[in-house]
Structure formats: C-alpha cells, structure tokens
Length: 172
Image 1 (cartoon, rainbow, N blue to C red):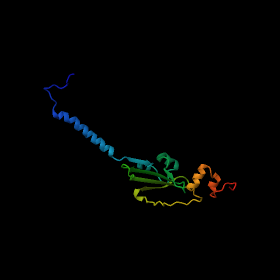
Image 2: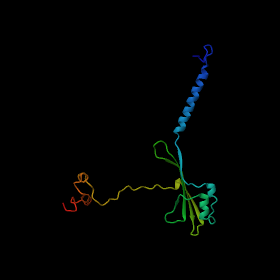
Image 3: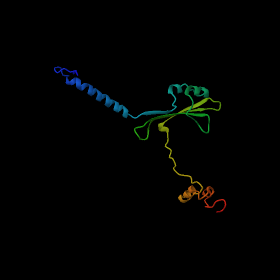
Image 4: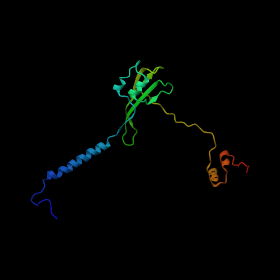
C-alpha cells in the first residue's frame, strides 16, 4: 500500500481546515433556508396592469373573462357581480397560517353585461365573523348499550331497535 503523503511534505493546516469550514458554512446556510416558512398564494388575484385595461362603461363580461380569467366567485344574489380573490399566507411549523396579503376585486356589470364599477378591497377592509358553535337537536331515540348488544346478538329484531318499544312486529 502506498501512502499519498510523503513524510517530508505535510499539508499545511490552512488547507486542511478550509474544506471543513466551507462545508459547515454550506450546511448552516442550508439549515437556515430549510427553516424559512413557505409563502403560499391562493386564489385568482388579477394583475393590476391587466386590471387597468378594464374600463367601466366600455368593457363587457366576455372581455373581462378574456383579460382576467374566470372569477373566483360570483355573487349569490346577483350574477352581475364577479369577485377575484387572492391571498398570500405564511405558515411556520404547525402554527396557524398568517395572512400576509389579501386582495379582493369586485367587478360589477349592468343588465347588458357592461362593466359599471370596479371595487378593490384589501385585508384592512375585511371583518372578522364570529362562528356560532351550537348544535341542532335531532329527533329520535338514542340506542343504549344494552339494546345495541341485544340487537347485535339477534335477540331483538331490527324493527324493535328502530321503534324503541322493545317489541317485534308480532308483539313478542
């Protein structure tokens, strides 16, 4: 076996330490990049330059669709209002996502299909909606453990489980 280093020509300490320090630097940069939270864009926010081409009083529904694409949503009570909605969020680990930017553009048409107005909304225009957490009671009889067990063993018929009386159709 032949040794690549000659006894009389040792490697300088600077050359040996340089690859290790560069490797550590690269690894630490990779670790920092891996820890940065991802930014997600959702929806269909229109490009402001293209949106500028939509002129109230002149642009039709077909032209708006050709310029901006299909709307994210259409108003439920008026088919003459189209919404283009876009949102950028950032999520770090398992925490809830943080909204970085939110844009809503409402394009309103008249009955002839011509744009009458364009409204822009951002995150500051939004309002928090409180979700009501209540349950609607359902009618019916709850199945007890004993009735479920007897029904599984076949002692009680299916009809007696559904009726809640404990008797089969024959009255037994």
